[in-house]
Length: 247
Image (tube, rainbow, N blue to C red; front, side, top):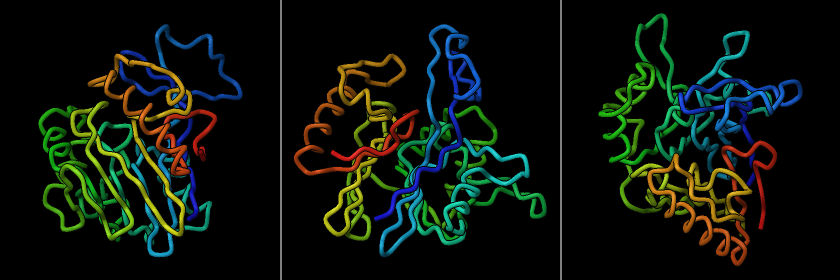
């Protein structure tokens, strides 16, 4: 399998939950707001023998030419966004779900950014997002997902096409799900915001921004040990330096 990080860049985020672009080459890390986090926003593309898979969709930012950054990242790696076959959603916070769809100026409606893909989202996570999300753009994303044949809702745990496993683990959000992709002896693990950075796998961090920080910490320890035994390749959505790490 081929793994391609699809970074939208680094961002500083504080208690206002606003994502402020951070240039790692120029900006002074000491000038960030007190208590803010420095994170990468980094969806992934996994190319298997059967599928082109996107995992989470980023903030939905566009570059100076008006092209979606996630589309440009795919094109830069020789992949047409129209060829993406599956989109796996860990949860629906805006830094993971902003790139689900975009407003179409001509049809005056919301259209999926990966029009030929099936989107996999947890049923309870989607229902919660529709009730609690305040961003109008994100609400448009979520409302589009409720009545589309492109969307497949998942529940507690299961298998997609015999090679993708998913499980609802909660932790970061009540219905956050994680994924394993297996092919030809390789096992890729995506823990989303329950396992967002390499350094957190090696510590006993209990983060206040998680729905259940203690559970997240315990799951990270469990996965880190299991990944060593089973030779997992970890994908870290928010890691500034290490997006991919093999045990």
